[in-house]
Length: 175
Ligand code: AMP
Image (cartoon, rainbow, N blue to C red; front, side, top):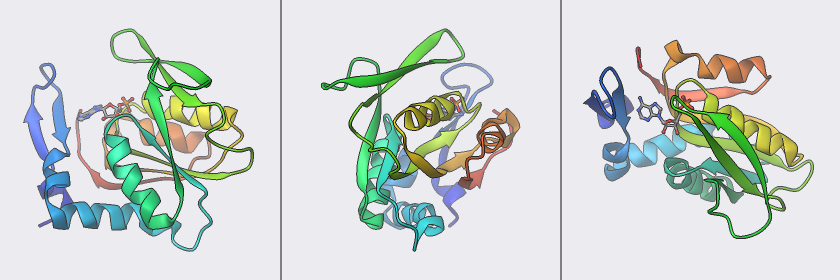
């Protein structure tokens, strides 16, 4: 079984034309989950990683496991209003309207090496906001890794254009 086989596709969710790539089936499969974490960690073995930053909410599950494996700390990047201490915030565009993502202002020290993790990159809007928050924090971003890339939506290329090392485990065509 491949990692792609462990991901469930829900057609026309949450709206017509979107193929929703549901990783809950991968997370529930012990072998697929372990393999996904091993593959996410692979590019960073031997590197010094101070922190893993995960994007709410599926990036918390994956990023927590990756941080554990790399003996790194974990930093949550959350939707507006969820973090209790002082935050940095960045607005980003979604398909409908805008949203805001936040990080605790003391979560990453200047010069700390950070790996960014999320389940999926599509247009890259979410990941670009995360990169901006990490840059504002003074982080040295050494990579951004995703279980799924939707390359036709261009997000991975947008990140690469900023000089970010992007890795993904599975690519699906279309939206
Ligand atoms: P984007 O900002 O366009 O790169 O979208 C990435 C975020 O939206 C990730 O946090 C994903 O969890 C979610 N997302 C976008 N498109 C899909 C999709 N087709 N299936 C599942 N999740 C998606």
